[in-house]
Length: 334
Ligand SMILES: Nc1ncnc2c1ncn2[C@@H]1O[C@H](COP(=O)(O)OP(=O)(O)OP(=O)(O)O)[C@@H](O)[C@H]1O
Image (cartoon, rainbow, N blue to C red; front, side, top):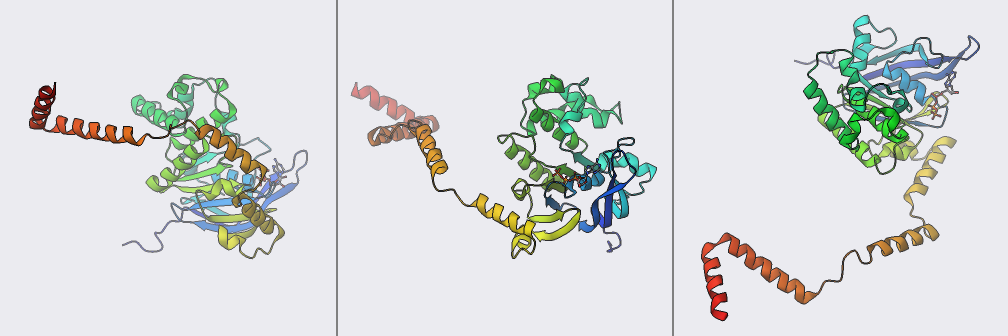
């Protein structure tokens, strides 16, 4: 029988602090200061905050990735962080191998990190092939094709190279690459960034489906509440590295005690209020222009005749005797 001791949370951050080493000096700059939160498997958390509030630092640390030798990568300077049972402050050698498979990470610049010497298909498959060269190529090909379709790109893209794609298309390929290993936790820094507005619904619906089908835990980091609102109401608001609020969007924005929360509420109300005036009138006029002539006005007599013909055709196809009778009837009339 499962006891509460067996119950594994997907993410447990306890008094977590994250710092960068400032360029040109050895001074630490604390980007995230003593934050705590927990996530159950399958939960989706939106982390929102202004520029510089520490979202990307948190995303990088949650991803478990390390970029040794790169000054821009932050590190944990206080507290603990556990993701699907792995201690990300002091990962074991085994956990270091597991991290890339268990935690998917999509950074704002992941599209630019794709390898230009590999095709799109090879890039998508790379997280698997780099570990197992003998992996069933047919299965992998099918998975890559399904993912490229799921991120709303044409299958023809699979044979292209990243440098032949637009920035937004590359970011969508990176999405597919992050998902090929079927991670149990997915960290996405600015999910809508660089992805054109037409492709966004496909991406968001993909994230929704993955969350439901695989119980994938997700952390979506964004400065824009609207970008994550479709996927979750559960948010953590950061301000200069500290947690300003945690709860549902409504809880956080009801009676906001902080200037930033007040501004968030105003921005949300503004976004939800349809704009009377020029923009809307123009939009409506443009829609009318498009709508006019899309469908001609229906002619009631013609509609009646069409309906009768289609009912007859259906009967003729379904009942042989009616077909005979109907044909005889028609011949008699001639
Ligand atoms: N490489 C770095 N070295 C030193 N400090 C950094 C570095 N990168 C970011 N910072 C600082 O760390 C803090 C948090 O930055 P972070 O990039 O995490 O913010 P953010 O909320 O993701 O911002 P944005 O929305 O603009 O991406 C900021 O004060 C920033 O100036």
